Amino acid sequence: MSNHPRVFRVRQQFTAPTVADIAAEVATQLRGLGLQARIKPGDSVAVTAGSRGIANIALIIRAAVDHLKSLGAEPFIVPAMGSHGGGNAEGQVEILQGYGITADYCGCPIRASMETIIVCQTKEGFPVHFDKHASQADHVLVVGRIKPHTGFVGDIESGLMKMMLIGLGKHAGALIYHRAIQDYSFPQIVRSVAAEVIAKCRIVAGLGIVENEKEETARIAAVLPEELEAREKELLVLAKRWIPRLPFDRCHMLLIDQIGKNISGTGMDTNVIGRKYNDHKAVEDEFPKVKVIAVRSLTEETHGNATGIGMAEFCRSRVLEQIDFRKTRINCLTGGHVAAGMTPFDYATDREILDIALPTIGLTDPPHAKLLWIHNTLDLVEVECGEAYLPQAREMSNLEILTEPRPLPFDAAGNLPDSVKAWR
Image 1 (cartoon, rainbow, N blue to C red):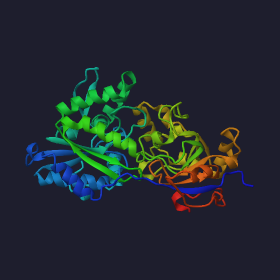
Image 2 (image 1 turned 45 degrees about the vertical axis):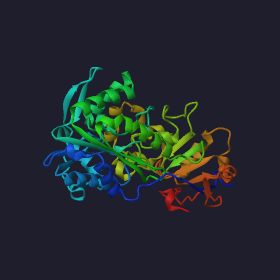
Image 3 (image 1 turned 90 degrees about the vertical axis):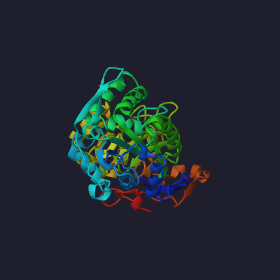
Image 4 (image 1 turned 180 degrees about the horizontal axis):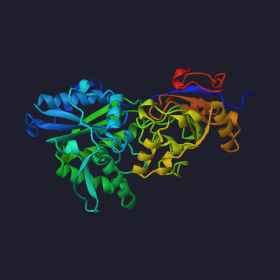
């Protein structure tokens, strides 16, 4: 008998909406703001582009650029991603290119710099940094996804207001804001800095994106700056409702094919793995409760940035070979989360990882372990589940059982397919 659990595949039934025509919805939303009253022909408009892997992001930005051009404006794109891309302009442009955000596709220039201007001092006593190129524009359009933050809880978390701080603040701003959050709080610093940016940096509008559980565009909302905070609160409620989740709330071992900055700010979304407040254990009222995590690879789009790997207990040795330690350390130090860059125990093969990890889960014998195998924390429609879950799965109306239990598909070297999606 194998010393590993047999697994079966389930498909989760998700019901969140989708936007049918992305470009048309962007145009409709922006037209509804009447920006022609604020943007005059010939005005320059900086359009933000972040580092997350947002569905349809290149198309959304191109549609926004097209609308601005229809007003006679002269738009350009600025990377708004704090310290990502190795903390340099070239690396940030490379990230955008990986998402298809290029000057040719979007129909406007990309102006990248790590230089900032200091706008003012906050009431807490630290400087407000703002991207140099954006500061020289007549207007700024902030584009980004609204979702639960990986480390903070509140009515404002990760979204347009955060992008005005961490993204448009570049490395210098991200560094000082994360330090300030240690002394005050995330909500206070977000509101304090965002208020100054809206008042002094010519923010003309925000374009908020909310995704559903299938990593599809579920809602696009254009908002005027004076309504930005109130509308972002409303959109965050939807984002929390539509966040993808694991099919079960208790798990002995979670196998993750890939992590990366395009997936989450912490490589793997803490809202999905249940480690928002403690890197290695869910707190009392937090779910799911996952005992051990094993990471198998980094995404190509993360360009070696392995921020979040420190939340895993185990990884394939190839993960360490994929890490750009300079990029990872810059990002972790800037974010004030040094442990996120620490390395787990590594082993050459998946079989070795399971052989080592499964005896650490407690008294449950390895063949009966509650194992979950996912592609990444955004892609949770189909999940491989240890046989121990089968009775529970049969009682859940939101799960479709796709296969009977069968052995894990190790190859001759002791490795699983690189992607759970490649095996049925």
